[in-house]
Image (cartoon, rainbow, N blue to C red; front, side):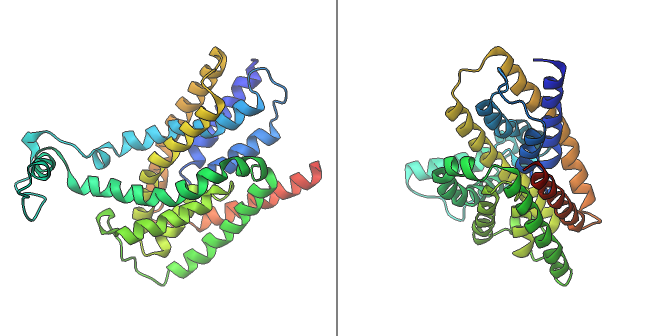
Length: 302
């Protein structure tokens, strides 16, 4: 690999780290970079490897969420930190059930476990619909034209929904206020992000806002929801590609993930500070502008 090849990997890592958490479609941007910076017939950056790389690189972005929000997400503690009350209204007489209750009281933050169960509920629609269609979507949807159309469509949606949302007060101002129904509805919105260019974070943030969540809650829940979704998607792509990486391909993958991790930390902090004073309209305008530019370029290249 030459210097330009390594530079492309650095650029892809930076693009992933920025766009994964901003509602502008990371997969869409990765496809666009790969389409306009082609490495055809490359002995290392093969077409199959790059399809896998653009998904698995997201694992670096996942680690950024785990590091930044570890205290909010880790559901276990030592017995010394046991709450002064039981999480359960009644202790079961059954030996097995009672043992589970005692373990939960002594070692678990049950509110965090409930949060993870809600995240699992949100993941189900994407798993049920996404797994059977994965190969078909790879073949038919992963191209610049589809990305451009989705960028424009959801850019317009952001503008309309933000205008609509200005007349409402959020009913969900904390993650603990999210109900099981809310979790399921956000999961349905996440299915929309199976189409590249939509943006997983964009779809779930829009869904969260529409069901009454504040921007902060919608963004944080989106970050947490990314952990199992992106881990599962990465694992699926690795299994399909096979574990026969060359040494150079493994180095490429690790470099991309490391860059994505570092940039993601900064991007997440930026977004959470930004939405304290601003709405998501600017991202809507960005999506529309980029989508139009991509369509013009695609038409010119054709």
